[in-house]
Image (cartoon, rainbow, N blue to C red; front, side, top):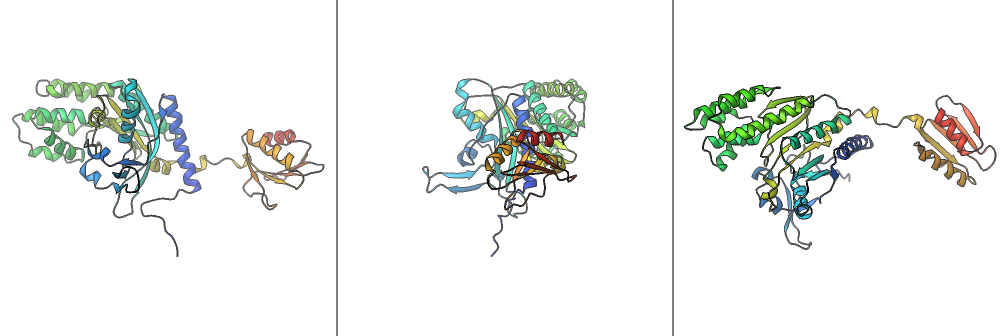
Length: 412
């Protein structure tokens, strides 16, 4: 009987892992250069972490893998974590908040979401960062620059950022007299692209509705329109002025950094707990990540009030864009070493020197040299102790010691 893998789960072949590690390495290098420290949270979390604070929507909660921990210590219902930001926020509250410092945290993690057809991914890998305890436009700009830098280190240069702002939209909806529940419902539909939902909003402030329509239909690469909107509706949108000014300030910072962006208020879909700027990153038509500001999350989860923002990059999508040919070690850097009985000490010595020098060394098994190497080195118990063959030219050289062989391979 053939045993199949679970639906919605993927095996990562050697080529897949080359791509995966190249994405991970580029991200962690960028993380280190921006002062972020790597953390890791458990795969299992208590279900109430995602329910008690209302951090996930009911639709998302219906898609978590949940079960009772009968044989564990708690008897609580646990889940395979469906999100990476919320567990990181939990760890911050539990282990870091009392220090009173700004926390710059990064991670490479998987999350799990049930998908009933089994044709889409149920296990998803992402690399991400959270900046907790530091707020303001500069913090938002830093995270966006970090995300773009990480992607560029992966060899992907054509990046575009799509910007939205949940706080600005909420401020305008609040000006219309909508309560929080009504704001949540309208905001969700707006971020889903249902702009006609405003036609059903009855208010005594039609000018605010008009301002909101203009805002939502804005797609451009300049903060100028937002400044004009602020001037035209200054008196009507007083509750959203601070959010609008913050959004403009962040955009101006992105322009100073020469980062390509487009304002698109419908691009924030799926960001349930975000309170400020929202952004998505695209490489061509592929959405490769996103993030934003979530200043209320730490308090919602029982911590002290703390500004916070973060982003995630989707490793599976980024991996598919990586050129595999750029990742292989050149054949010229691969050496097959055949050790004849009685020459083990010298064979180990020369293999160690080659590895320290950065070469890939494959020990020939059963006397059969590896086929995918640029060099074959035979180690003998008698003179000549080392016989080196260039697999490309078939040139043979006898070497008296390991250093001579290393020099020939390095020069060759």
